[in-house]
Length: 268
Ligand SMILES: NC(=O)C1=CN([C@@H]2O[C@H](COP(=O)(O)OP(=O)(O)OC[C@H]3O[C@@H](n4cnc5c(N)ncnc54)[C@H](O)[C@@H]3O)[C@@H](O)[C@H]2O)C=CC1
Ligand SMILES: O=C([O-])CC(=O)C(=O)O
Image (cartoon, rainbow, N blue to C red; front, side, top):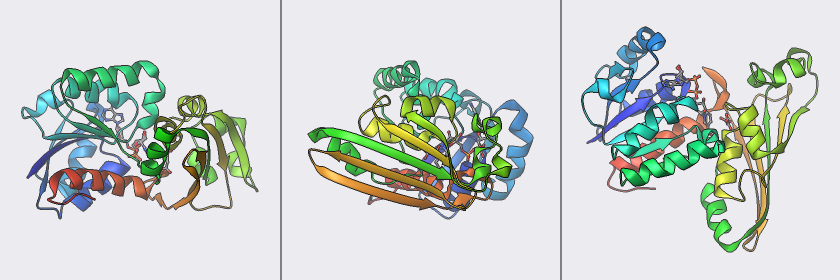
């Protein structure tokens, strides 16, 4: 039985817990939230994971998990993931955009080395990371990413104000630049850009275009990559989560897959 601690009790975590309820090889022992979210998290866990404790730090849980799973946000890496890695607890993370801060990326790697363990960066809402990371070994020439989401997915981002999102009638480019800049400006919408960069040609060389599309109901991720291996082109048409339109449902399944691959007899 794999004992799992989760960070965050929002859209991704709640859906993950709902699915894991039916897996006899996995037990979620605690969910880490901010102090202000304790009561809300307790209500959620009563429904989807009654065996799990709500805590504000891993230390408060008083027991060591086999795996720590981050599905919270960028700040959770410094706050919870790095200390857990230093203690030798393996971690999987979805807030890959946090690694666009080179200081956080270096600390994450150093912490995993110190704890003689590993942090796995999940593919989340995007596919093809296996192909891209393999292609990098032969040498990549270019990686171009276009992220297209419904206009409401850009609420509370720098695009909200710079553009009148409610009044858009046609697809509008709200950002064009490097993946590093996209991840810094759009932390909740550019994790895919950061993931592609880390697997591919890096944050500076990965070209990114972000589009607010009032005609779309999907989160569409388009990737073009070329190099010594040849080339590929990928389009993912992700269904957004009802609880958070910024997040594609595939992110949830990516987390469940990663946990299952560590818990089950056969991994795929
Ligand atoms: N890699 C990928 O493809 C994707 C990654 N993400 C990442 O996943 C994160 C979570 O997504 P959702 O569940 O949809 O967001 P959400 O906003 O529904 O839930 C996040 C929850 O985490 C909590 N939280 C935030 N920072 C925390 C911290 N430092 N410690 C403890 N709890 C904390 C919040 O209070 C909230 O309850 C996003 O912020 C984004 O960074 C999201 C979508 C795709
Ligand atoms: O869930 C998605 O579609 C991708 C996403 O939010 C991100 O790249 O941060």
